[in-house]
Image 1 (tube, rainbow, N blue to C red):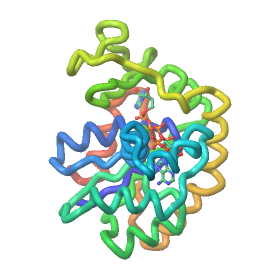
Image 2 (image 1 turned 90 degrees about the horizontal axis):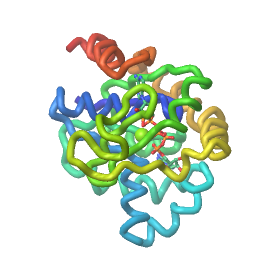
Image 3 (image 1 turned 135 degrees about the vertical axis):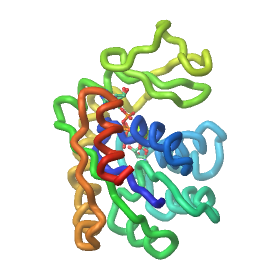
Image 4 (image 1 turned 30 degrees about the horizontal axis):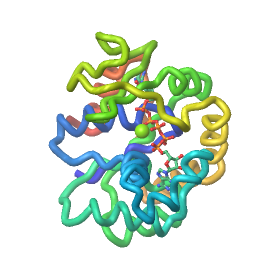
Length: 206
Ligand code: AP5
Ligand code: MG
């Protein structure tokens, strides 16, 4: 299955994709995560995209797609999270490996802002927590692997506002592209990750 999880920053794309990955056995490709890996490795692409990410802006289409293309490889299926974010990116993907379904995760903006300031991530395995809705059993420690939890630099309130603005302006129009192809399914994000997963599985007929 080729699946895109679409939605604004903090909608829960990564959380849902991690759950679906273990259910479907299809690799989860987290575009933001792949770019942050490039930054940590200090690669040329990493150096280029680091400024955009820290400011909450979109990195350039060509560079982002090149990073993704290497990971897409010969994969028969994918769960894509954070790509495409522009219509140009959607067209690039269309030429290489078009999606079967685009799940649009709908969550109100006031919920998003609260979620992002309380988000924590595992430095080691990437598991996603929330101090309010999904807290770890031990403060600052990953339940899954014991790794250290940290806060993303772009989760500062002023950068979150910019990411939301960029989403509305540049990314939301991509939905129209996929609506014309008839592949969009709407899923309303629930208060818990289990309920959101159940809604998504139902929509996928699983
Ligand atoms: P990226 O890392 O993709 O960030 P994003 O789209 O802003 O989305 P987030 O990862 O912040 O949120 P999410 O929807 O995954 O939510 P999560 O599951 O963590 O991209 C970062 C940057 O990289 C971009 O700003 C850009 O600069 C660059 N970039 C990336 N892709 C690009 C592209 N294609 N082109 C150009 N530039 C690109 O959940 C959020 C919180 O809510 C967590 O705390 C979680 O525990 C909690 N939560 C989740 N679900 C639930 C639930 N159902 N109930 C209660 N709490 C929940
Ligand atoms: Mg994410």
